[in-house]
Image (cartoon, rainbow over all chains, first blue to last red; front, side):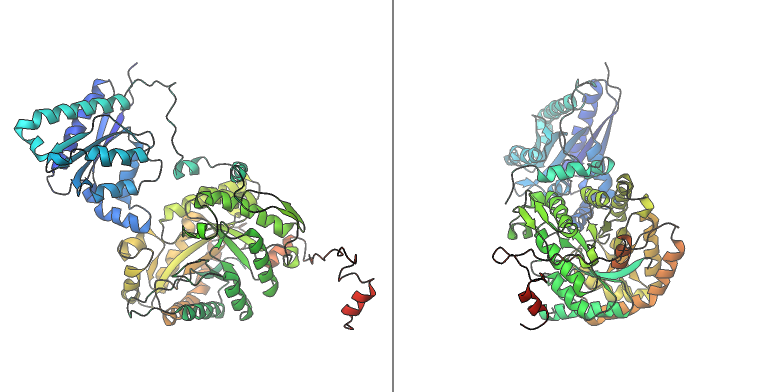
Length: 222
Length: 393
C-alpha cells in the first residue's frame, strides 16, 4: 500500500557565511532525501531553516526562557517533521555554538524517536569524526534515531576530484533517512514511545487522582 | 471587595545600574517594609513577598517579614509569591501561617510555588526531580493539618505523624486561602482546580500565550471538579510596570534598569519585551489600558499584583511608582468593575471564608491530661489549675 500522506523533512543548517558550504551540503541532502522519499511512493515536502537568521532569537531564548515568534515557528516545524537533517560547520573541534543553542532550547521530548540525518562541514578532512564524537552523542541524548551514514564534507569534497564520493554518501544517507521516514510501518505498527510535551499535557491533562498516586509511588524518601 | 490590587516582590538585592550602588541586606529588608507600608497607604489590598534561601535575595523567613509589616498596618492582606511547598516542611508552613493569621486578625493568604533555584532542593534535603510530586504530597498534608485537629499521616517525603495537632489552629476555624502559582506546569493548574483553590499566574517575563493556556486549563478543570462554573474560578495575575506622567520619560528612565535586569537583561530590547510580555513602560494611561487588556485573554479575574521594586530601582523611585499606582487605582477598580460579568465571585478574604463556613468558631485544641496527674491546665475541676487561672499561683 502506498503511503499517500505527505512526509515533511526539515533541514536545519548552521552555516554563517553567505553562501556557505554548510548550506550547500544542506541543499544536497535535502534534495537527495526528497528524491529518496518520493521513490518510496510518498509525497514529500522539504523546509530549510537557517539558524543564522535566528541567532538573536536563540540568544534571547537562552536569557528569557521563551522563543520569539520566528523561533517558535522553527521549533514547531522541527517537532512536526517526519525527518530532520541537521548540518553544522565544525568550530573548535565540535558543532558550532549556534547549532548547539538551537538544540539547547528544545523542550525535552521534541526529538523523541525522530529520524535524523547528521551532517557536518569543515575546512579539512581532519575533522571528519566530528559526527561520531559530537553529533551522535547529542542526538542520542535527545532520544532521536540517527541514520547510520553521517555525511561529512571538507572543502576539498566540493571540488571536482572528490565530488563524486560526496554525492554517493549524500545519496546513501538520504536513502537511509527515507527508509525511516517513509518505511513500511502501516497503521497497526506501534509508535515509538515519546515523552509527553507540555502542549500535550494541556490537551489531555493528567487527572489529579493520578498525580496524587504518582506523588506517593516509590519508596519513601525520608 | 471586588477585585484586589497589590504588589509582589522577590526581594532581590540588585545593583542600581545608573549609580553602581548596591543596597545592603539591611537596607533592602527595611526598604521592603517601607514599600509594604506605602502600599497600604495608597489603598492597595495585597502585599506579597517571595521566598528565597540564597543571595542575592533577602526573602528568607517570609512570615517574620509579614508579621512585622502586619504589626504596622491595618488593612492590607499579607501574602506570598511564592511559599516553597516543595522544600519547606508542610508542618512548619501550617504553624507559621496560622500564627500569622492570629497575629494579623486574618489578613493572610498564601501562594504555593515550587521555586526556581535548583540547589534549594538539595540544601533542604530534597530532590528537584520530585518537584511536582513534592508539591502534590506536601500540600495534601498541609490542608489536613489546617482542617483536621488531629492528624495521622504517612507519606513519601517526610516522616509519618501520629496523633499530631498543628498549633495554633487556624483563626476562627478557617484556613488561610491558598493560591497555587505556576508558569508552565499544567499539573499545578490541575491541583488548584482539584481543591477549588485559587490559581495565580506570574504572567510577567512570559508571553501572554502561556498565561492564557494555564488559566484556561485551570478554569476548565475547576468546573470539572464541581466547584462552580469556569467563570467562578479564582484567578490572579502578575504584572510589571514603570510609569511616569510622560510616556517617553518612563522609557528613558527605566531602560538602563531593563537592560541590566537580572532576569531578562542583556537579551531582547525593551520594546520587544514589552510587546512579548505584560511589562508596560509608559504613562499611567498606558498602564491602565494594558492592564485592562489582560482580562481579554484570562477572563474576569480576582487579583492583580505588580512587580515594581526589582532590578535595582532605588526605594525613592519605587515609592514614586506607588504614588502613581495610587493615582490610577480608582480608575482600575472602576473600569474592571464595569467590565465584570455578573456572577463572577469577589476575591476571597478571611471574612468571606468565615461567612462561607457559617461564622467564626474558635478551634483551639486543649491539651489532654498528662499521664502523671491526669489533669490538664484547662481542667477547671482541678483546684491547682483553678488557682493558676485565678491568678493565685
